[in-house]
Image 1 (tube, rainbow, N blue to C red):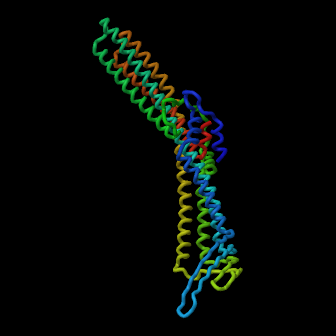
Image 2: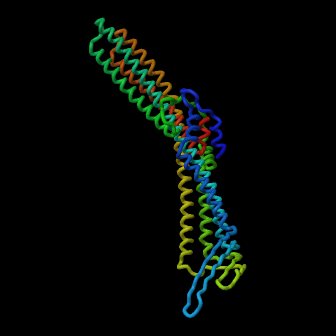
Image 3: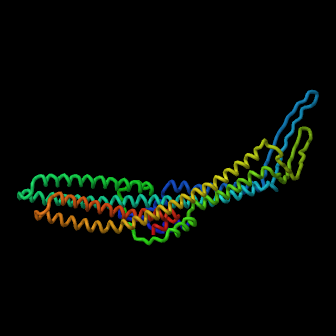
Length: 415
């Protein structure tokens, strides 16, 4: 757990308004996120529970005192006062106390695994929000460039209209397309700011005024899926916690079964008492071993055993279900990543072809050999190709984190 966080704590906070890297965003979130801080407290609670369980097997000392006054008809009044110390230590609990101690010890390990999983989940959420912000930012740049292209068309058509070589309907259409492009840019920028707000919330910072993002690498080598499935089985903290909960369930069953067994404890006591008229206090001492055995309790113990058996079965079923879910997560993320990598190659080529088409249509229109509809169609094709390429680019990054999170190594995907 400490190594997990240390790798990010070695990074430094940004000192200027420059872009926050994904690694820095994750580190800040790990330091500041209140949800993660709340989860970390469960480790302290588990440690306290372990100490409580340990204490139940140790020596206990109790002090007591009482004062009495009595009046009986025909006899003199009596008054007395007593004080006593009693020490007891369990000798045999039917394996109840030992099982409770071991269960509490396992509880510490479970809480640490839950905290590690919470770290994984937080980094994964930060990465998704960061990539969403990047995608919205890049889409905004695409729309800005498209807006500029339409503005250039409008300017050129306006000049040709003034010269009498183009009809006014072409100028009006160009003006409409420029206005539409401005709307697309504004909506895309708003989506970018919303995604930045989501990221800032995860980082627990108050403002997005100095928050911006930078490109993340999308080049990576993909191994065979079997290696990822093996890593998931080895690394997933939630699967490891499931296995420990089964162990806890076995201890809980042993605790329930201990109700059928006898218990032994050693006791020592010392006291002092005095009564009116005795003239002095009288000390006393005692020692002994006490045993008890629950012979009949209206089937309470029997039902506690059955309850523990059912809970143990539930833990086992949950682990099987979680293992199936992890398998599905790994396979889905792997296939999505493979498809995204293919899309990344094909969309890059599509952008090159769309840019060439636009260039030709613009030149033909200026030369009077083409129509405005060809120019507008080429602009639509270009913006579509660019958006598809942006989508593929950040789907690669997104699915890379999906796969890393599915195998329990989200931190590794940051580097």
